[in-house]
Image (cartoon, rainbow, N blue to C red; front, side, top):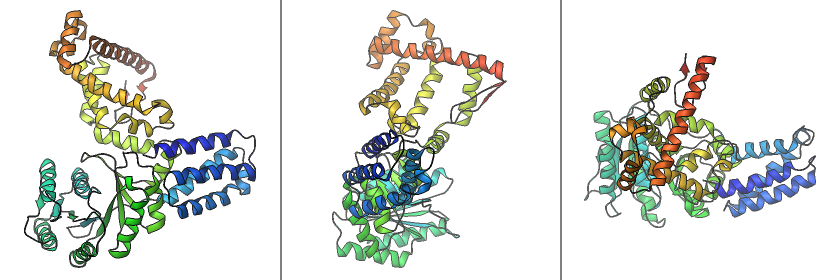
Amino acid sequence: MFDSLSARLQSVFERLGGHGRLTADNIEGALREVRVVLLEADVNFKVVRAFVDRVKERAQGQEVLKSLTPAQQVVKVVHDELKELLGGSGHRLGMAPHPPTIIMLIGLQGSGKTTTAAKLARMYTRQGQHPILSAADTYRPAAIDQLRTLGAQLGVEVVGEGGRNPLEICRAARETAAARGLTPLILDTAGRLHIDEAMLDELKAIRAEIRPHHVLLVVDAMTGQDAVTVADRFNRAVGIDALILTKMDGDARGGAALSVRHVTGRPIAFVGVGEKTDALEPFHPDRVASRILGMGDVLSLVERAQETVDAKTAEELVRKLREDAFSLEDFRAQLRQLRQMGPLDQVLDMLPFGKMLRGAPKECGGEQADLERFDAIIGSMTREERLHPEVINGSRRQRIARGSGTTVQDVNRLLKQYAQLRKMMRQLKGLEGKAGRVTRLPGLPTMRG
């Protein structure tokens, strides 16, 4: 997300840093460019004006102009203001003192409410909670069936059936959740293609009787300023506590995320970054501001690694590295864990100046395809070949390539990268013997002597 906006802003600040010293004139010129960049990113024009005015006031202060690194100070000012624009400290959903905590999802049809309900259920399940879903969208064809299918995949109960009105379904779900001690209760309410009074009246009735602890508006970030307009209308009519922006992994220009807080006064709680049920991230304004300015987001990277890397598997990997027994089986396991962390472009965006590392998006797409291709190649090997790759001769390479739908060159490339990794691991082992320990990657335990 924010790829175009991020690249343009970084270019502006690189040119600003080329000045020997900053003056009010070159700061003014840079902020004019910032204004254009934000408008092209579909940020609300009132938001852009207020943002640029605040940055200008702070950037032309004496503490910036007289600092040893004035250009960096301007970037810091922009970072701080971006953070505030996006919501300051962020928003987290608290749990009710007595279950169930009720979370009501509202929004237009097609915004992704049903999928988001399942994503929330998965998130709470991983946190040790026992969520329950309420399928209260009785208007969209197959909406209830879709939620039941997602619930079955997650092992989460779904309450909802045709022939009952949405309020009755929500009431029954609340009674079930309270009787069985399930929490949170996530209400997937109905939407329309456009806002109409009948829909708003229905949502008001559900809110008045069910009394949810959190009302979350789900909006499609791809719709840009329309998303902000929708959020403002829902907030005025029904009242919302926070928002969830979906489809942030697409080519959304970022305008909705940068405008919605200022216009509605309501924070962003989560962002959807994919279709799968694990593609939901808490929204951290400070981390997003850092990503936009090319500073990376190492905290999110570490958190994602901790979620995907199994501690027991990591300990076993360290043992094999010590014993120089790292096989292609282990290599495949590491590739799969890397794939579980998400698309490579998302992972690299979390590193400081990660966009410089990954280059063009199509190149990163090729690297992602390599991970899948390597997995298929290793899957086409026999157990002996995976444990003892030195036995793989020319004829075996041809057989492996045919079995995996790849080429012999692909097989050779995999074996070469595996050999390079083994060599690097031996070097690390040598350092371990000298230094007593080796710095580890996020999620992996430290190797100790």
